[in-house]
Amino acid sequence: MPAFLNYHHLRYFRQIGRELSLTRAAEKLNLSVPALSIQLRQLEDSLGQKLFERGAGGLRLTEAGRIALDYADSIGRTGEELMDVMRNRAPGSARQVLRVGAVATLSRNFQLEFLRPVLHRAGVEVVIRSGPHRDLLVALKAHETDVVLSNSPARRDAETPWHSHLLAEQAVGLVGVPAWKRKRLRFPEDFAGVPVILPSFESNTRAAFDRLTAAAGVRPRVMAEVDDMAMLRLLAREGEGLALVPPVVVRDEIESGVLVETHAIEPIRESFFAITPSRRFPNPLVGELVKRMAKENL
Figure 1: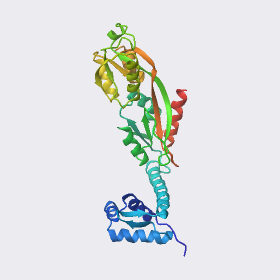
Figure 2: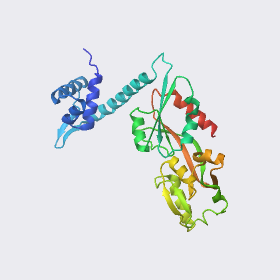
Figure 3: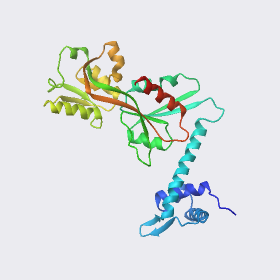
């Protein structure tokens, strides 16, 4: 009688492979250790290979076990993808769900511009979650989001073959209330002691700003460091300092005259990316939005 693979056996094997402990794996799977041990033995019998060996520190994968775990992970991810697709885009259903992760420091105006084509489309529900770049990529890998919007690309490797699509790029500027425009300050020469509102040190634009002012031998007075773009915009409106932002962040304030761009700093550019995973069943809405925005910003 030909051997066959049991999906549950692979799921149990993946958990044991992660924990390298039957006890811990059994706890995570809500099984008894003897029951889990039987499931593992049945998988080894089906494959005709020993998958683990016992060492001083606990279980160790054999060579066959390492190969099997790679395949089990691939099969498991495909299964998770299948469940994800079926739950959100069931055959015959007109309803589509687009789940977006957005880095907390990303401009809300940019997010709106990216999503606008589907926001008013009948049968489409958009779910937006904000958070740190690293946490959002974890959610993307776990099929909890379809795309991550970020101002930096994702690091790509064999295990996480992300695709970082460059959607737009623009020069960063200093903005403030109109009174700042009348001061006619030269950047960076005249900025010693000038109050500024900057992104945190994790931002590429902050690093570039610091390099430019240091090269000019001047030190502005940093009155605030802000990760949230909405808060940065509000602080700029207070009038106490100049804020370093991409113009899209304060587009409405500039159009209404509440804020003005005092300096366009061409050497400092902010990039906007849509990060997608390699999936057999990608959400078609993501491809549509990425293609549209990239085309508009060519």
